[in-house]
Image (cartoon, rainbow, N blue to C red; front, side, top):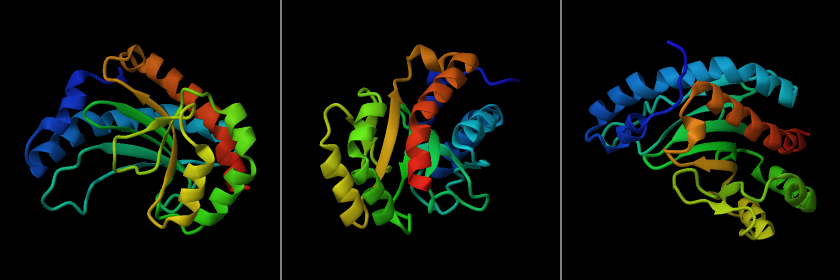
Length: 205
């Protein structure tokens, strides 16, 4: 079966009690969709970035008690892992889907990426749509619209605070029409990542 978008049932996965039950639902409902998205999006991302990309689907393998509150897939130039590198993400909480260009705390050269972004602050403001949102912690649902955030402050914090992160992209509510068909979703993802690709290339030097 081809990818046909996301349904309310996918988001309701995160209301299932118990680690084993929730993980079973993630594996059966969501991970096959991530695999199909990976097959459709990887080539487009490679063309946008000029870099070979590999798909990583979160396995939540370290969890022993608490069920995950979200799940995600990542596209990264590194075949072995993504957390220590800039990467693109698609994932779900119970109340929204996210598409990110992500720089998370495991990055060994956070200061370098932050300094680059601070140097090109006005270019970022001028090229990234104002309705895109920024998160400073991938574990939390919160995000602030680019038009409302103090971008310089957020990037300075990303540079100086060990656990601070920088994720930029879009949120979609479960009822968003872009999530309701596979074709519409892939188009939306391509358009979102196309706008983020220059930022990715800037950070990759």
